[in-house]
Length: 529
Image (cartoon, rainbow, N blue to C red; front, side, top):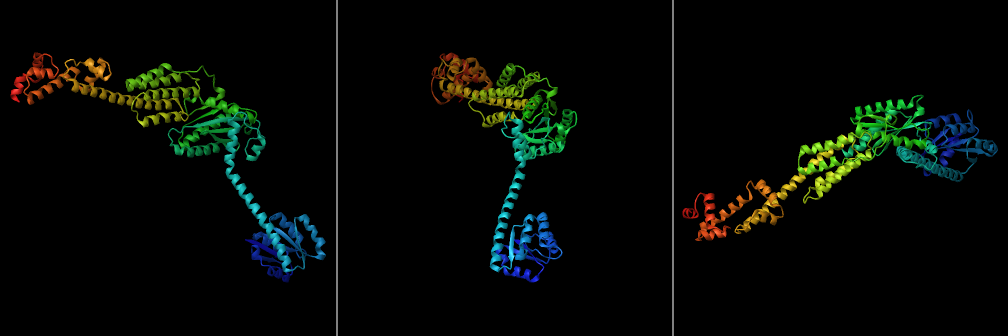
């Protein structure tokens, strides 16, 4: 594990020291020898030496000169001076060279062993400490990007969050924020075409692209899936804001060229102190809101925007029309209603992103509320509706949100259609069952059947005709004639008896109706059967 180098111009001393100690028991796997300082220095430069035992008086290069050179070139090497009583005062000069260990000659094997054992213990402690420090440095280096992003997010995206020395933290984290003027830019990436599990990968890739375009003089970090850049304007000599604008334009094109990702960028105002970065970031977010009404894949500069938020806007009439068109189950009217919502929002050029999100959230809430009134709704449509809530934050434009809303609205309309069809079938079936049970009642009418199934007479008349292809009276007559035929075939009952049993109070009217239906009188029908 360790290597010891014994340096003495007397071979017998070198051999004696190397043999009188069980070096392996102390953790030394290699024992090297040198006859003077020159040879010893060459060995140290070619090998990993942990401990040097050296005499003082030697030709060419003495032990003190060797200790001085080793102390400069190899500060980790432990040096032990082997000296006689007559040279001890001379050996004390090595204190200035960093030598802490002396062994007086002659020395016995036990004394030498204990002394070397003590030194080895010190070497083990120092080695362990150095390994621990090296590991801590490695971990710190590996976690540095995370620490930097956490600090930058706190510094830039939170109002008045810092209660410690900002400049000290910047220095400790190695951040290039030592200027006097800064500007915050935001790049919002469009993840609409990217699967959820790949968002982190694309964000990481986009960050690398941005960092490559920015260079090392500026800071880039992620905040809520947006890339935030802190530009050090002192990095530029003049017209820093204009240079930043052009740099962002190049960066935007680079992201699209390399990753095929749409992205929208925004710049805040320049500020003259680090605590003011939050205000630049907030202004950049305001400028970014223009993507909803002015479009994506652009660079918006807060300096160029007359951004004054209007009184809160809400498209009451457009939303009412959308809900009605869904209930009417008209795809063309649904498309027109959704388009009207988008047109109304585009007409408000300074509407805020929070206002837009609230409008679409309210529309989704209204649609889900209408769905809740249906008896049977597919779980898939509920899940899709709820997922749209979460997707609003990732939507880049009114067009994207409107497209998703249109798709969902049509599905809601289809759900209404299925529900209505199921409800109609139930109503018609109840009416049919009621006719089968009450056909012998001469007072059976459409009005009575409608009251029985719980709908209006006019609605039942239309619904019965639509679902069955025959009106109520025709179906009732069909049922009565079918039962009359059965009675004529299987019984000897008189015609007037059969008339009464099938709901006819007038045997004559029964006979007329029977002949009209079958082309024969009741007696002719019975004789043929």
